[in-house]
Image (cartoon, rainbow, N blue to C red; front, side):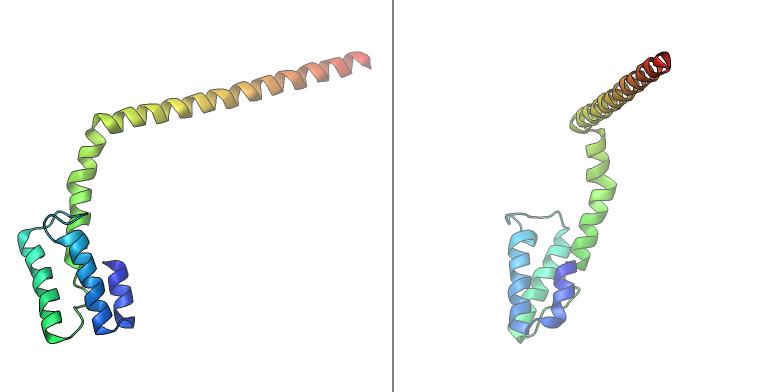
Length: 130
């Protein structure tokens, strides 16, 4: 939606209709390859706008896909992401991530500790030589 809106002023009406139709076929139409979850009213409004622009030989409006974008954003924020955060997949990946972070921190501490000991031992050895 954002790219369509940004490109819209630079497209011929034919190219704008072509791009809009491609987005419609890929994301909007029921059963499309990457169909997004939209209300039937939103889906119908987009389809009608594309059909009308084709019939009238004009470019579809620049904001044609804005409502769809907003709908997807709201669904992600209010539904999909909160459900994902409650899922076992997220919990398992989060536990693994925390375990990796813990292991990395332990490794850094051991490295520092061992470096610190070596430095202390070499300091002690050099003071004994004096």
